[in-house]
Image 1 (cartoon, rainbow, N blue to C red):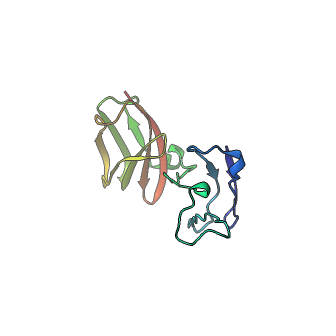
Image 2 (image 1 turned 60 degrees about the vertical axis):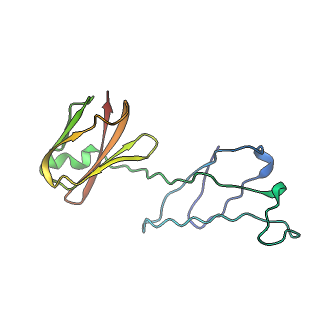
Image 3 (image 1 turned 90 degrees about the vertical axis):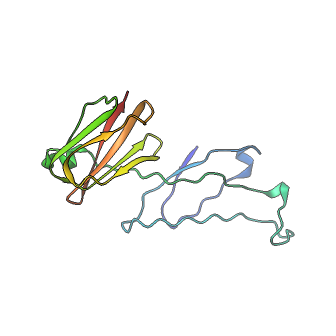
Length: 155
């Protein structure tokens, strides 16, 4: 179901391996050091197809496309700033604190969607998480340009 490939490498989706309904196809790759990822989608057409027309027997459609950033940053990266987040699990509020200003905070659900973003510019901030659905979240914080992530549970 997943295929690994490197930047600059093409991949082919074999139509004989998938049915005519919607299929989820996942790919994993490592971004180059520039962190620039270019994606191109090209659908082969038959030699006798007229450009600009859709051959319903040879159609491919892309519905949702997403790139989910995976990071190795952890709370250990922020340990030198005495970063903490509590209580965990959190019901209505999650308090974050550190010995230096917390510049940026982003909260993601487990499918990689950003659900909250704020810039506390403070060493202590209480975040209202009451509007989040019950579940597990990843909080990414930036302190003095160093990013770290912290997993918390919303009750």
